[in-house]
Amino acid sequence: MNHKMLGFFSGFPAHSFPDDIAEQLSEALTNRKSLVFISAWPAEYERNDSDSKGMHEMFEKCNMPFEHYYVIDNRTDSSYAVQLINEASCVFLMGGHPEQQFQLICSKGLDTAIRDTSAVILGVSAGAINMAKRSLDTKESCVPYDGLGLADITVKPHFELENQQVLSTLLQISMNLPICAMEDESAIFVKDSRISYTGQIHWISKGTICLFSPQNLLL
Image (cartoon, rainbow, N blue to C red; front, top):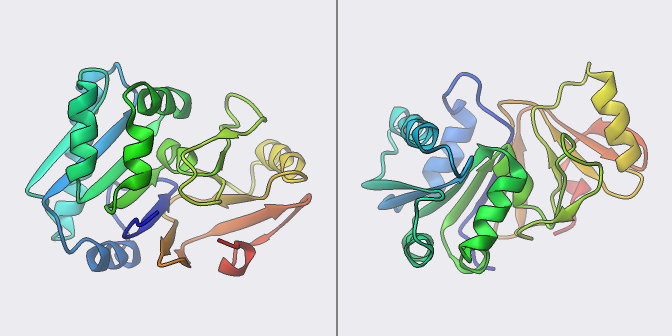
């Protein structure tokens, strides 16, 4: 895979990129011709139009506007969707329902195009989940599924350390699958096989939890 950069995000409740994340994006997004969003609510067209507009505005606030932006959902013809991915400067997997997003990607034949593109690929919440080699949606099941395989990074977004019920579930799952539990406003970046991160991220593995370090991951 020859992606320019991968970015895994938890969420941005303030609807803006923190400065350190914006700086990483600015360095990677030197080409901003086309930004392509992939919906995680494929049938909710008004929501997708509103959310994609709002997310593009996050780039605009950081002086990173794109010439064009698009959203792929159930309205999008499969061949046109593949063309959009092939021509994208940045592909952004949106938040929402991980299973519905993954079904959309597979049904329109976007999985191969996403793996083959040299664009920057970003994912937030559900999108970050689906970027993984082994994806995990704990709201639906404790059993991981095969994701896009862009990196061997399994994330749990919107993590709150004080939520003992979620933590207990993750500790059990981690006996077989290590997890990056990401608090909001955090990010993991992969560029040229080098890993960097910002924000509060916890590493859960073999039933224990500690603060995340790039050394936890072997790519």
